[in-house]
Amino acid sequence: MRVLLISLITVILSECTLKADESLKVMTFNLRYASNSKPNAWPDRLPVMAEVIDKTNPDIIGTQEGKFYQLKELNKEIPNYTWFGTGRDGGSRGEFMAIFYKPNRFEILEYDHFWLSDTPNVIGSTTWGHSNRRMVTWIRFLDKKTKREFYFWNTHFDHRVQPAREKAASLVNKKVAELKTELPIILVGDFNASAKMNKTYDILVDDGGFEDTIVTAKESINADWNTINGFRETRKGSRRIDWVLSKGGVKTLEAEVVLFDNSKQYPSDHQPVSATIVLEK
Image 1: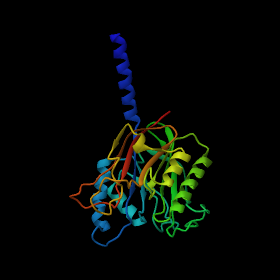
Image 2 (image 1 turned 90 degrees about the vertical axis):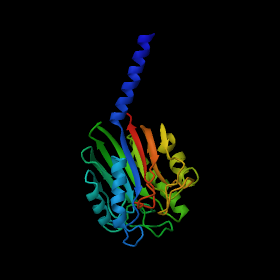
Image 3 (image 1 turned 45 degrees about the horizontal axis):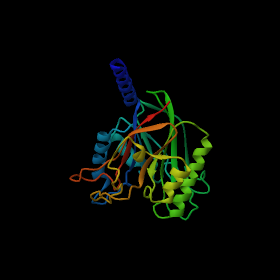
Image 4 (image 1 turned 180 degrees about the horizontal axis):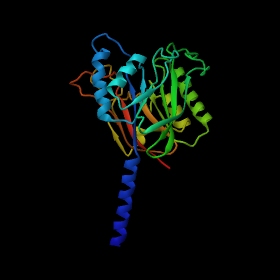
């Protein structure tokens, strides 16, 4: 009996070690578009943002609102990453749904962009009553460490028009279904909708089959905090509008709403959200 118990413990410990070795951390972070207006000017926020990223140490980050020069300046501060994306107005123009990743671990196998409208292949298109152009950037990655492939999708839904958010969620579900894949999919972004309290969330989770990692994680940290702060002290509440969602063969070990040091300059008006996951075989 004792030998059996020791063997069982050994197997459990080995499995935990394996999962820890194979895990990767993903993050969503609305950077807030760059401005030189004080307070909270971009030059003041940049070093603090880099400090938060270095401390959290995600492997992949989906960012929102970053302008081209803003992303280049951020990349200089976090040189272990490279980034990929296109401006929502085409080329280097407008805000990006940029994806930062560690090139020593990940290789891009495939990518695409589409706009959240009835004409998703038309750059900068809007047809649902929203004035800001909204889009998705996605990458199919190879994790060179584990030899596993997965999709990473990054988006930013509209901040004013609820029907546009709902249609965006339905379009994301449709585009995911068109992949006809069994590979894991990570969907991150600023959805401008409160988790569990908005139909947008229901369309993605209930209809689309995505899981909310902060709900399904073995350990959830600060799950009852808002993710939008308006450059003020973050509070507990129901405004968790930045999500890390997953679908298909993803186990979440830990998820966290990352809180800032209130004694320092705030890096953004959003809290980043991270999730440590394992891609199951």
